[in-house]
Image 1 (cartoon, rainbow, N blue to C red):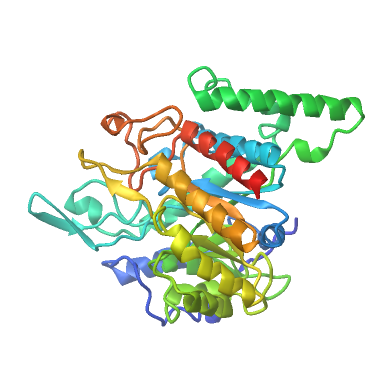
Image 2: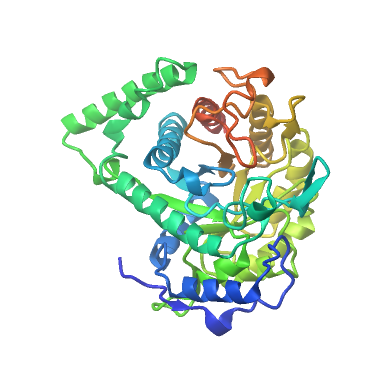
Length: 450
């Protein structure tokens, strides 16, 4: 792999003069300039060549030859950059990938919401508690979670912490995925702590035994492919804080094109996808594979306009539409979008985010999601694609490898009264490991039924 994408974007920064939604109100512009100048001198977190590889693999998804599994934290935290947390997340995604590949008989492209997902769009810019109003928490990259005046002041030094936390995370992920941990012969080892306590763990163990038998058979035939020993795993996050993403955008020495070297893939959120805004202009200029979140108010015209801006060459794998409609709307709202985009000749990846449209507040005040709603949105997504003869390209989920109690339901059922036990998210409720595996098995069945 040649090291590339080395020189800062500089004059190519066409998005800096456009309106940008959801940006922090940095109190000291000079301090911000110093931080971004320093970030511009830092090495890339990913290489342009790796972004190209992912775009090629997403091209296979767009053509109906593979499936995208994208998952990870709603918002990463600086105090959760420990080996255990990172390994648990990776382990959960590897297990889901093994289930989908084996039970769904489909190659799976694995992309984490990891090593950069430190920023969150918010519906309100302030938060009031007991008569005290403070700036809202926008993720560890901007300010602190604690409800104090000092913690909530946006601090540009946190952008450097985001870079270093992302680098540490990627470093460990690369070690795990290439150093033997991701070897398919480890399918049992990924499950030892888990199988006794969970129905989905036991179901996974039965699948792991089948995979073992298949590997032993291939081995006996003299086949031992290198692909079984390592895994290609890519990073992604929402490109929200444009001061950071701009500083991490470099000109690729091979091609002269711009790449955002903070992640292999970046996406633009539902709240920042204004066609005349800075985020879409930014995404249009970088060569990474990009995604856009589409909520229930999206029209077919919106989708087609986004394709014209972000994928003018109609290149399979360049653009992923991440639909987040809600279980009650997906069957009504999605068909027209898929139909008209397909008729236009564009080859986008269609993927389902079954989390963001299904949030509600429990009586205890906890923000939560019902596993049944998550599952129903995925079912609706598959039904729409089956009805239209198009390819359901993937799922995009908020999950953790820890045994949290944030979403209700699942095979190892969590009740509303259990939410307080291990409610650890700083923002949105995540599926725990057992619920994530349940989902992978159910998605594999739906995929086979296509």
